[in-house]
Amino acid sequence: MAKLSIRDLDLTGKRLFVRVDFNVPLTEDGATITDDTRIRATLPTLRYALDHGASLVLASHLGRPKGKPNSKYSLRPVADRLRELLASEMGRAVTVVFATDCIGEPASTSAAALAPGQVLLLENLRFHAEEEANDAAFSQQLAALAQVYVNDAFGSAHRAHASTEGITHFLQPAAAGLLMEKELTYLGKALESPEKPFVAIIGGSKISGKIDVIDNLLDKVDTLVIVGGMAYTFQRALGVTTGKSLVEEDKIEVAREALAKAKAKGVQLVLPVDNVLADSFSPDAQTQPWDSSVNFPADWQGLDIGPHTVEKISAIVTSARTILWNGPAGVFEFPRFAVGTNAIARAIAANTAATSIIGGGDSVSAVNQAGVADKMTHISTGGGASLEFLEGKKLPGVEALTEK
Ligand code: AMP
Image 1 (cartoon, rainbow, N blue to C red):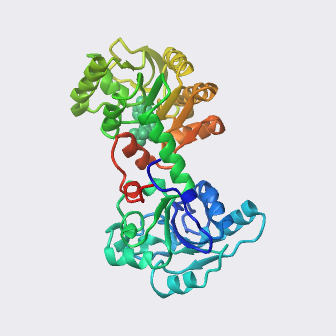
Image 2: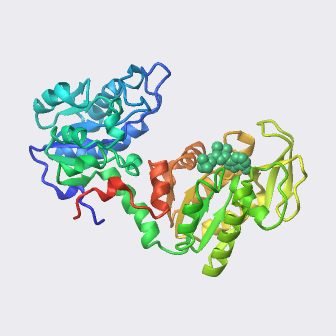
Image 3: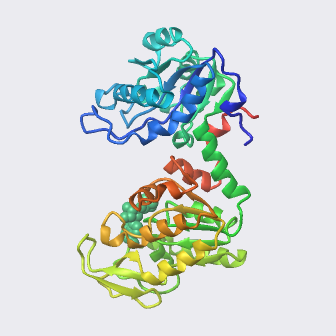
């Protein structure tokens, strides 16, 4: 990796400002954390820093408080959970202090009082509009809290905010945390030097959100599999009608161009060969199997890939050495239309010789739902950020880190 890592630094006696992603789901009243995966994901970095004699100032956003304090989006419950998680991670009690504001007196006094091995969690960065505005004075105030900057929030790296970009103008060195480093290593290797055959499976609802990913991947992959709602826009581009299936009329031409690019590049572009059609968008709709080469009945819609497509994708996945997956193959929120998505998850899991990368968002839920998360090489923690990375874009929060 071209960027400085926390592992390159001497941390002894240093106070680190660590940008983390503690944007966890909470109950409606904001009092209880319903899923602490994101807190757990940062533990290796926090442990590494504490083991090497640092003290930590942690900062995160939580939800969308729109630039004003709002107790529903307070990080205080996260401080309590973090204290428990760190104690079990470190095998000893760890002091975790909470500051009621991320700048000003509450933050600076608590930061100055930190001893090595201690942790301070700052209140939600987005209680200040200056965070998302990437305000220089605000960035400088954050920078003043520590001596070294570490970014472990890959999921926020596609945004140039004060805590991800602005702060690095006032606080150097700026290094990647272990989680950030892992994301950049796996996603970077897939794009730059993948072991071949490299197969990407792209699904989900719409082409519009992923066309830049498709376009960039067509320069890299051996095989591109398109599933989910977006496959129907491709099917229309091939001249087959799709009934009431999800189609973006204004993207049919874009789909046609992608098909042409695949052909020109010698990339195998695979579309569903059969589907599960439903007579309504509902979990208990009537269904029937349907061949993709035959016009769909006008009142029916495709909500999942069919068994022949599953077989075809499984065979492709089995012989791959690098597999990248983003987006479900059907409306997997309805169990009856999750069959294709679950089958893809299991097929990827079964290929233990391949590097398997799950690119954030719904595919992560799908892998968890199929119970195969521990079989994947890397599961990205950043939905939007991993998509932008796969589009080939430079992420501001990564660019801002110090070169090695
Ligand atoms: P995205 O946010 O673009 O990754 O899309 C994820 C969503 O795509 C999920 O909520 C799925 O329910 C939806 N989806 C997948 N396949 C279909 C389909 N055939 N028709 C409608 N929606 C779909």
